[in-house]
Structures are given as structure tokens and as C-alpha cells.
Amino acid sequence: MGTTRRRSAGGAWAWTATAAVLLATLLFLPGCPPGDGGNTNGNGNTNGNGNANDNTPGDSGLTGKFVGANACRTCHGAVHATWLETLHATALETLEAIGSDVDPCLACHTVGYGEEGGFVDRHTTNSLAGVQCENCHGPGKDHIDHIGDPAFWPDVSIAAQVCGNCHTGAHHPNFDQWQESGHAGIQEDVIADLLEGGTFVNTCGVCHSGDVFVAARVNGETVPEDYFAGMTAEDLNPITCAVCHDPHAQTGNAAEPDEGRDFQLRFPDTAEPTASTAVADASNPDRFNLCGQCHHSRGRVWTSTTRGPHHSVQANMTIGEMPVPDGTAALVPAAASIHQMLSLQCTNCHMYRQDFESEVAPAISGHTFEVDYDACVACHQFPEAKVNTIQAEIQAALDGIADRLGDPAQWEYSAEGGPDETVQATLADEIKQVRFLYHYVLGDGSLGVHNPTYIRAIVAKADVILTSIGR
Ligand code: HEC
Ligand code: HEC
Ligand code: HEC
Ligand code: HEC
Ligand code: HEC
Ligand code: HEC
Ligand code: HEC
Ligand code: HEC
Ligand code: HEC
Image 1 (tube, protein in one colour):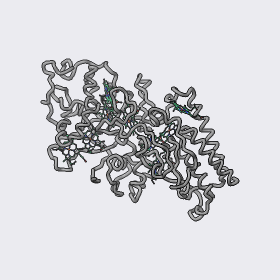
Image 2: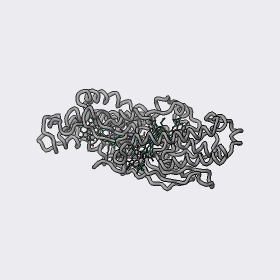
Image 3: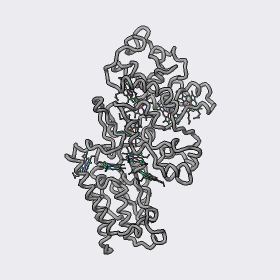
Image 4: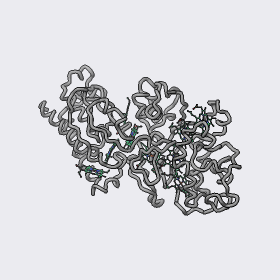
């Protein structure tokens, strides 16, 4: 497969023209109160199915830089066909159904509204109705007029801003909340590694860089190590909207989408893999759900000496599995979490959503990915207290283990302040096993919640091993 696709991070065109319109729009009428708009369109005719005398759909006003999705169909037929089934394609119908196809609303529900050559009304610019190719890729006229010329290829960007121009505000704050999340940034040291190339683009980038994830994991491309050559930190996309969402298609991957919707997830909300101790399984994203595409083990086992398990073992922990060197026995028997039964798994707790109620109770989109305790009340009366209790219990157990191991300079991983590799080779297997168990729990980050039974079994096993060697 090709690896030469242009990347661009800015989605810059969208900011210049559309943002001004949207900003102006938002100042006057943010969001989408259903049904309270006026009931006339730009021509002063009643809207509806276009049967009023001069309201017949037409394209006489289509003279500018926007050409409409139909003009892309001949050559990009596959993308066009799947896009046509998404809610984006019928976003204007949504407004018409509630009589709100009026000024402040049209900006995010049509192509180029308020811009020269953009949507005016069904009568003059019918081809620009709905959210289309050109909302995300920029105006297409120049491309159509110079098909062979790469200089006019439309922008292809997975930058969150491309979606954030519309998915913002009190009614659908997906972008605003995403910006507050850990997914909106890349760790400084990882950025440096990615820009430098070497081997990091593939080893770290596949989970930490949205560009590499989409190229490698989604599109199956081979990503060269000089992928980011000549770019700066600002050019790198973290875990953006288009990493998790297919911009072009319904996918059927959402476990419980709202009625009539799909959510366009690239991977399923839920997965039910059988627990395994094999390294190849622990680090195989095919086994896991959407979140587990990245939140899984990187394959380290207790014989590793440089570093312990990565901070990404949440999917394995929830299933209740831990990799061990091939052919050796499990350290702790497998035990799936009681929380695996949640209908959306990770998403239940980390992406709790609530509809818009009022400006003081805006929508909660779940896109901060922070745990919302309202997600627990169906099953637990005082979930926060429950979390505090188990976290205190597990933290105390971990502190006890660290105490018994003694000075970290004697037992930690070599890259984490422990002894150098020559001393590592002399450490007892029991010490290596206990430190792995210890870091497996720490790396998961939930301190018990992801899998109460299994995580208690892990710290109990560490205790048994330490006792067996008189520590
Ligand atoms: C006459 C055929 C034709 C039409 C019509 C056409 N395109 Fe293209 N498009 C191409 C070709 C050829 C390329 C070059 C890249 C390729 O071969 O995929 C391209 C490239 C692109 C790219 C960049 C792809 C990349 O990998 O960087 C985008 C985005 C795109 N077109 C969108 C559109 C949109 C949106 C429309 C309608 C406004 C449109 N195209 C209309 C033929 C066409
Ligand atoms: C021009 C404004 C605009 C842009 C840009 C935009 N969207 Fe949307 N999006 C909408 C509107 C409006 C709807 C609701 C359509 C409806 O229900 O009629 C929507 C709906 C959606 C939905 C819900 C689909 C479903 O079936 O439940 C998803 C997911 C989505 N957009 C993701 C994205 C992503 C990802 C991007 C960027 C790659 C993006 N959108 C860019 C306006 C936009
Ligand atoms: C800032 C861009 C923007 C503006 C302005 C806007 N919308 Fe929306 N609208 C969206 C997006 C994005 C969605 C998709 C929400 C989602 O899927 O989470 C949407 C979805 C909708 C829906 C589908 C139901 C829902 O909430 O998901 C309705 C109805 C709607 N908008 C009506 C309106 C009306 C009426 C107005 C004018 C008062 C308006 N919109 C103005 C961006 C906008
Ligand atoms: C909601 C935003 C959005 C809409 C609407 C949209 N695209 Fe895209 N498109 C993207 C993003 C983001 C990418 C890059 C990620 C990817 O490849 O999945 C992309 C990639 C592409 C590519 C290059 C790679 C590929 O998947 O073939 C082409 C060509 C393309 N789009 C054409 C179109 C056409 C034609 C339409 C309309 C029929 C369209 N897009 C509608 C956001 C969008
Ligand atoms: C399998 C996917 C995956 C790979 C590959 C990966 N990471 Fe991570 N990494 C993650 C996830 C997921 C987190 C976030 C966990 C959390 O926030 O609890 C993370 C967290 C981190 C952190 C923050 C840890 C902390 O102390 O909070 C750093 C630094 C990091 N990774 C560096 C790297 C480097 C460097 C590489 C390549 C050598 C790499 N990662 C490869 C998934 C991965
Ligand atoms: C890490 C993955 C991930 C990222 C990044 C992400 N989403 Fe989502 N998104 C999801 C999941 C999962 C759901 C379904 C939640 C559920 O089932 O309740 C969802 C739901 C949605 C929905 C439909 C529900 C709603 O809020 O109306 C929209 C629209 C949406 N996302 C837009 C976006 C936009 C825009 C961005 C970027 C600013 C984004 N998402 C980033 C995973 C993601
Ligand atoms: C494409 C890879 C990828 C996917 C898919 C993904 N994540 Fe992440 N996630 C990361 C990385 C990388 C980090 C660490 C970011 C950092 O600190 O640099 C992270 C961090 C987090 C954090 C810690 C955030 C913080 O503020 O410190 C949570 C919680 C999280 N992810 C939950 C989820 C959930 C829930 C899903 C599924 C809806 C998901 N992730 C999907 C890669 C991913
Ligand atoms: C039963 C609810 C629940 C489920 C299901 C769940 N989590 Fe968590 N998760 C939590 C809680 C509670 C914490 C601890 C948060 C805290 O202390 O702030 C946490 C912590 C985390 C962290 C560390 C956050 C940080 O700030 O470092 C990550 C990453 C994470 N979860 C990802 C996931 C992934 C991926 C899944 C699915 C495999 C998942 N979670 C399933 C409740 C849940
Ligand atoms: C569908 C029901 C359900 C939901 C929703 C749910 N849990 Fe649980 N959870 C359980 C069951 C069942 C148990 C095992 C019995 C028990 O301890 O109550 C459990 C156990 C726990 C435990 C371990 C208690 C202990 O000390 O053994 C914690 C902590 C916990 N849940 C936190 C949460 C949090 C936080 C959320 C929301 C973010 C949540 N749960 C959502 C069903 C649920």
C-alpha cells in the first residue's frame, strides 16, 4: 500500500473562513434548541418539501468554490456511497423536520453557509445541503478543475479542529471536552522520539500518534521511520476524533447507539476475548475493544529487566490476564472483572453522557474520558466511597510490597532507578516476579476498580512470593 499520502495537521482553511461565521453564529444563538426557530427559509417561503412555487430544489446559485458532493461521486464513489448513509448527509433534513432551517442553524448543517459560493437555500444551492466532503476537506472547485495536479488536492487532515468547528458548544461539547482530556496531547518525550524517527515512529507512534494509528492500524499502511521528518510538535496529531470515528461511514460498532444513530466508531465498543498468558495475545489489538486498541500490554513479562509493564494494561487487567514468558506457568490465575459485564465496558464509566438540559446544565459528551460517578448509580449507592475504599486498600498493599522489597536501587528496573543490567542478571526470579506484579497494578492506574477480584489476587500473590523468600 502507498505511504505517500500527504498529511496536514492544521485544517487551516476551516479556521479562516468557517470559523468566523461560526463564531458570529455562536455569539447569537449557540447550539440546537429543537423546534424553536422561525419557519421560513432564506427566500421567505415556507419550507418543507420544496413544493412551494419558487422553492423547487435547484443549483442556479452554484457558481463559487464549492461544488457539492455529487461532483465527487464519479471518482470517489466508494467514499460517497458510505458518506451518503451517515447523518452528516441529512443534517439539513434534520433542521427542516423541526422547521429550523434558518440562519443561525444552517452554518453547521450545510456547506459554506454565509461564505461566498456557499449554501443559500434549497432553491439556489440544493447541492450544498447537509454536512459534506467540503466541510471537512475544504472547497473542491480547484481540485475538480485540475484533477491531475497534486497542488490542488484537497486537505486530508485528522486534526480535531476539523470536527471541532461544529461539534462544540453547550449542546454538543465533544471538542471542548476532548480538549481537556489526556487524548488531546502527546507526552513531551514521545513527541521528541517521534520527530526524531529511529524506531519510535512504529513502536510508540502506533498508540501515541493519531497519524500513525490511522495510517498503520486503520489503513494497514507501512509507516516509514522518517514519517514526521521536517515537521514540528504542532504538526503532530494526538488521539483525535478521526482516530476513534470513521469520518465517512456508519460502522455498526457502537453497542448501544441512540435511536437512529450509529456513532461511526472505527472499532467495537465491546469485546469478549478469552484470557491468555501468551505474549502475542496480550499485545494483539485484534482481541480488544475500541479503547483496548491502545490500552493494552506491550508484551513485557516478569523476566524483563529494563522496564516494567507499560501504563497501558487496562484492557488486559479488565479481562483478568497477564502475559508470562512463553511456556511458563501463569503467575496469577485468570479472572475476568465483574465490570466486563457492563454493556459498553470502558465507555460506561469513562464516557458517561447526558443530553443538554439548559445553559447551566449543558450536555455532557463523555469526551473528557474521566470517570463520572453518575455512571455507577444503577448498581452502587455510594460509588465514590467504594472507589476510595478499594484504592486505599490496594495502595496500602502496594506500599507494603515496596517496603518489603527495600531500597529501589537494589530491585527496580534499570531504566527506573534500579541497578544496572549486570546486577539485573543476578536478581532472584522471585524479586523479578514481585516487582512485575507491583508495576502491573500501578500501570493499570485504577488501583482495584478495573478488576477488584483479580487485582486483589495479584497483590496477594506478591505477598505469598515475598513470604516464601523470607522478606
Ligand atoms: C475526475 C475525478 C475526480 C473528481 C471529480 C474528484 N476527485 Fe478527488 N481526487 C482524484 C484523484 C485522481 C486524486 C489523486 C489521489 C488519488 O489518486 O487518490 C484525488 C485526490 C483527492 C483527495 C486527496 C486524497 C489523498 O490521498 O491525499 C481528496 C481529499 C479528494 N480527492 C476529495 C475530493 C472531493 C471532496 C471531490 C469533490 C469536491 C473530489 N475529490 C472530486 C480524482 C477526482
Ligand atoms: C459542518 C459541521 C460539521 C463538521 C465539520 C463535522 N460534523 Fe459531525 N455532525 C454534524 C452535524 C450537524 C451532525 C448531526 C446530523 C444530524 O443528526 O442530522 C453530526 C453528526 C456526527 C456524528 C453522529 C453520527 C451518528 O450516526 O450518530 C458523529 C459521530 C460525527 N458527527 C463525527 C464527526 C467527526 C469525527 C468529524 C470530523 C472528522 C465531524 N463530525 C465533522 C456537523 C459536523
Ligand atoms: C456550532 C455548530 C452548530 C450550530 C450553529 C447548530 N448545530 Fe445543530 N448540530 C450540530 C452538531 C455537531 C450536531 C450533532 C450532535 C451530535 O451528534 O452529538 C447537531 C445536531 C442537531 C440536531 C439533532 C439532534 C441532536 O441534538 O443531536 C438537531 C435537531 C439540531 N442540531 C438542530 C439545530 C438547530 C435548531 C440549530 C439552530 C438553533 C442548530 N442545530 C445549530 C452543530 C450545530
Ligand atoms: C466529517 C468529515 C469528513 C467528511 C464529511 C468527508 N471526509 Fe473524507 N476524510 C476525512 C478525514 C478525517 C480523512 C482522513 C482519515 C481517513 O482516511 O479515514 C479523510 C480521507 C479522505 C480521502 C483519502 C483517504 C481515503 O479514505 O480514501 C478521500 C479521497 C476523501 N476523504 C474523500 C472524501 C469525499 C469524496 C467525501 C464526500 C463524499 C468525504 N471525503 C467526506 C474527513 C471527512
Ligand atoms: C500499546 C500502545 C502503546 C505503545 C506501543 C506505547 N504506549 Fe505509551 N502509553 C500508552 C497508553 C494507553 C498510555 C496512557 C496510560 C494512562 O494514562 O494511564 C501510555 C502512557 C505513556 C506515558 C506516560 C506514563 C506515565 O508515567 O503517566 C509515557 C511517557 C509513554 N507512554 C511513553 C511511551 C513510549 C516512549 C513508547 C515507545 C517506546 C510508548 N509509550 C509506547 C500506550 C502505548
Ligand atoms: C478515544 C476515542 C474517541 C475519541 C478520540 C473521540 N470520540 Fe467521539 N465517541 C467515542 C465513543 C466510544 C462514543 C460512543 C459513546 C457511547 O456509546 O455512549 C463517541 C460518541 C461520539 C458522538 C455521538 C454521541 C454524542 O456525543 O452525541 C459524537 C458526535 C462524537 N463522539 C464526536 C466526537 C468528536 C467531534 C471528537 C473529537 C473532538 C471525538 N468524538 C473524539 C470515542 C471517541
Ligand atoms: C489510538 C490509541 C488510543 C485509543 C484508541 C484510546 N486511547 Fe486512551 N490514551 C491513549 C494514550 C496514548 C494516552 C496517554 C496520553 C498521554 O498522557 O500522553 C491515553 C490516555 C487515556 C486516559 C488518561 C487520560 C488522562 O487525562 O490522563 C484515559 C482515562 C483513557 N485514555 C481512556 C480511554 C478510553 C475510555 C478509550 C476508549 C473510548 C481510549 N482511551 C481509547 C491512547 C488511546
Ligand atoms: C467500573 C468502571 C470502570 C470501567 C469499566 C473502566 N474503568 Fe478505567 N478507571 C475507573 C476508575 C474509577 C479509575 C480511577 C480513576 C481515578 O482514580 O481518578 C480508572 C482509571 C483508568 C485509567 C487511568 C487514568 C489515569 O488518570 O491515569 C485509565 C487509562 C483507564 N481507567 C482506562 C480504562 C479502559 C481502557 C477501560 C476498558 C478496558 C476501563 N478503564 C474500564 C473506572 C472504570
Ligand atoms: C451494571 C452494574 C455495575 C455498574 C454500572 C458498576 N458496577 Fe461496580 N461492581 C458491580 C458489581 C456486581 C460488583 C461486585 C459486587 C460489589 O462489590 O458490589 C462491583 C464492584 C465494584 C467495586 C469493588 C468493591 C470492592 O471493594 O470489592 C468497585 C470499587 C466498583 N464496583 C466501582 C464502580 C464504579 C466507580 C462504577 C462507575 C464508574 C461502577 N462500579 C459501575 C456492578 C457494577
